[in-house]
Length: 445
Image 1: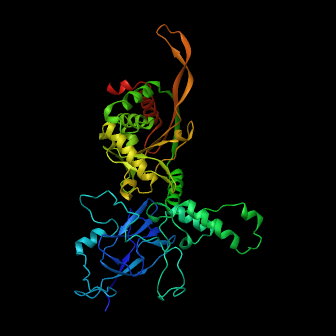
Image 2 (image 1 turned 90 degrees about the vertical axis):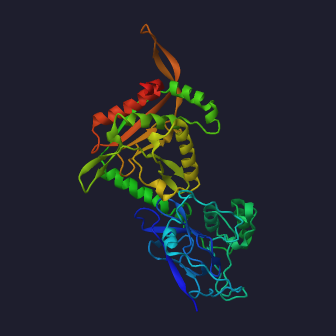
């Protein structure tokens, strides 16, 4: 007697409609416990690991790696066995533990909440429950002793799996050399080189298509594109620019970086640009507002959740630092470091991607002087910071005499929603940021 339970794909964000399967951690026949990670999915906002709400034996996976699944559709079926008895498929007679109702409710979408809420459990490459996604399945019974046996490839990260797919390499034939038996890019390329001589000659491809690379737009990149288009054509953007002598700020950065409490942190110019924005917002609260369509009201917010645009392999993401205006300089530096590292690893949580109130983007890291940033949807302003360069600058002494000297200079661009802010408020905010960066001591006034 069996007792199958279907786990439906939950909405792990706010109003998300689908998710793409990145990696399965289990396969049919595996025994799972409550809270055990069973799958990693990529939503329009982040990569998320989903835990099992049931204890039992996996009887079916309802989506392959790379497949997009709609929220509410069956994700996995777990056989919990007869109520009060043992689960079918267990040879040792162990009784499968059923999740408590309140525990199962917590698990759906987010996993259990408590002391560890907000932090993701690290996944060990050598975990006995961890298997690579069944991206390349063999036909039932082909070359196996069991008609239902599935041959799973060794563990490999999503970029490595994509490389294998692009090169036509079957991961089950690759010899892994990475940590914990994972497949590396070099392993895939070596396997591709071995397989090349045996490859059957393919028909001559169309010459035009062989000179093209097609990249599917989905997940984070798809969501970002849609959000930016919506923002650009619904919010009346205005962008203003200013060139600033930030020599004093760069000198302050060196002093701060040398202090003991900052020695374990990377003190970047972005830290001070973000701090200047937070200080200037106090005098221009309209830049930290949003529009309530239902009430037809502007909502001024007394807190600042600072969004920081981060370029990742999955596309542009804008996680935010909650309560950034209440942080000390060291706390802000730590938050920026954590946010950047998490985003680049593709582990930003859905909670960190929502609720932003104003954004800063550092285009200067790419050697770019400035740009016209598009507002993050729902926000009133975004500050773009250009590259900081040594440039000739006109300096005036106390006698009014002028001379040219090298100075650290950058360009700032502020885009704002002209529906929520008028030109005077936008100009005051940008000028206020520039004034603080030119003379940081003014922040004490």
